[in-house]
Length: 363
Ligand code: OSB
Ligand code: MG
Image (cartoon, rainbow, N blue to C red):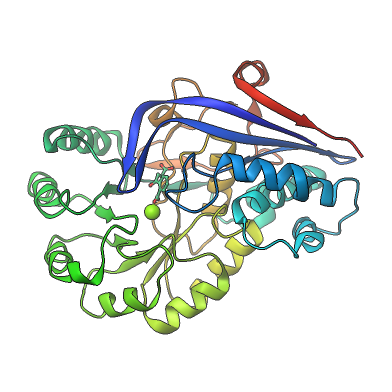
């Protein structure tokens, strides 16, 4: 096992209601077994502004507990790696790093793509782009125009109190038929219901996580007041949370991020549950490098991922990605890697050059 921290500069600053990113601190895990090797990515954000995990907490949990807890052991299948770790409370992004890598190892061993192993049914998927908060509306309009020209099938606008109604209305007026949605990253409370009722009139596909990151009850009260579907992101950490959210009516769409929900097995359970309930899901993103993106695309090839994911092209994030080939879309459709395992190669010399720390342990 080899865990490393790689620093990768974003082409442009990305800002959401709770903070911003200029650079990613990405943890990359390489696991080797008798079946081959697999690379996976930890998606924890640099600051605890999305969830409580950060690269620092994930490094600690991975190197002190998770990796030593499974090193040298035999497993029947990918999800088996979580069993000896089931005593660990929380830290889904750290745990997902090994669980996802185990799926890739299994795919490599069976000589199939990760998509095929997961039960994916499509070789390309519709994708969208998440557009961060901009200093001015003019800059936002320019970026939305550019992204629509590039062919993205969903434009997600980040919003926060004070950068919402007027801003979104300008975008809607300029692009009357565009597939627009808004993501608040938990920056409103029920006190803001009247502003959110105004957003409700702007023809948005959905409003993502308007209320608290750990809430389901208030989202249900808000959803009852809105025609626009609420999409839950931060509030959903498991299939259990999803069942509760659907029972309460907290939202009508689920954003699935494998890191947030503890891995691909958990993601599949959420997918299957939502498919049974007739609730659409889509795959969210955490500004991953190409390594994480390969996993997201494999997951998004499952049949109930009916809405475009936040899975943008490599060049939307980086001057140069960590994988080859880089991810490129064709008229809003992104090819799902079909080669065995995650289906993309690691640019090793670039990864080595960007590595800030390395932890290595063998059985
Ligand atoms: O809320 O979906 C979010 C990025 C970091 C943290 C939270 C979110 C996001 C995004 C970016 O929206 C999606 C992407 O392009 O990876
Ligand atoms: Mg979100």
